[in-house]
Structures are given as C-alpha cells and as structure tokens.
Image 1 (tube, one colour):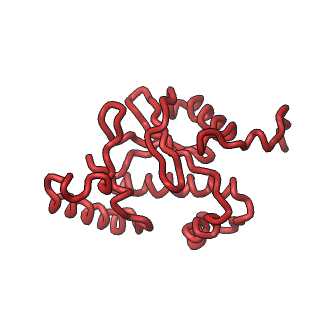
Image 2: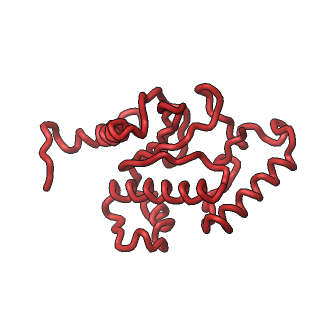
Length: 191
C-alpha cells in the first residue's frame, strides 16, 4: 500500500549536494533508529558511483557510502554486474531506484563475505536503501589516502604493498569466492 506524502513525490527525490535527497535522509534516519549509525558529520570523499560521508558510532567513526541515483547511461553497465548473480534474478532495469538499492545490497553482501574471509576491507555494519555503513579507515577524521594519490614515490615499501594487494586478491577469490571487478589504485586505501 502506498503511503501518501504532503509534498510532491518529485520533490521527495530531488538531490541535494550530489547524493543526499529526502529519500536518502530517510534511510540515514532509519539506520540511526536501528543503532547502526549515530551523528552524521559530513562528506569525506566521492567517487563515480557514491558519495562518502563520515558519521559516528559508539565504537568510533564509520563511513556512509551513499549510492547516487543511477543516470540512465550507467543503468545497463551497472546491471551487467548483477545480471549473472542468482541473488538478483528477475530484476528489471527500468526501476532505477530499485537498481540502486539492489546494488547497495550486493555491495554489502560482497563486503561481508570478503571481511569474513579475512580480506583487508572495511568492516560492514549494515545498509538500508541506498546507504551502506562501513568502518572508517583513517586517522581522526581524515581518511586514509588512496594508493593513486600517493604514487610510487609516496610508498615506503612498494614490494610489501604489492605483496599485500596480491595476498588479498587471493583471499578474495579463494576464501570469499569473489572476483574484484574494478581493482585499481583508486580503490585501495593506504593505511
């Protein structure tokens, strides 16, 4: 049954600050009510598919990965990552909002599998709608730098970093049964 709103539905889905709209704020509030996340502090980064927002929990900082509404040109490319996954049979690409929620759920599931297998990934805490909550990697309120930001000259022991990346790729595949579809220096935090 549809719940009625006092404002226009289109206003409900207007995007503020690239990623946050009333729909997303409602998801964040729901995560706060469940105790998954506390105070929201502000943005700490963004990528091509999501904005990263720093928040607090009783046990420290977390990051809210807020997935953007899906632009039409990205629907089919994102859909192809889900297409062969039996967990998402029957998904229709015409519902972009549903696709973003499914994408968030898939990322949470994959992150949980990798974390449980001992892969060095942020600890997942939960998700709701288009918001994924995971461990903050960094010091104080400053996120760890991306490998791409450092370059080879910014890394003390390149051989060790290479070994760690390969070791974690092996764990991802062997122990978690996953293959990283977008591994690059832009997706690796250096801590």
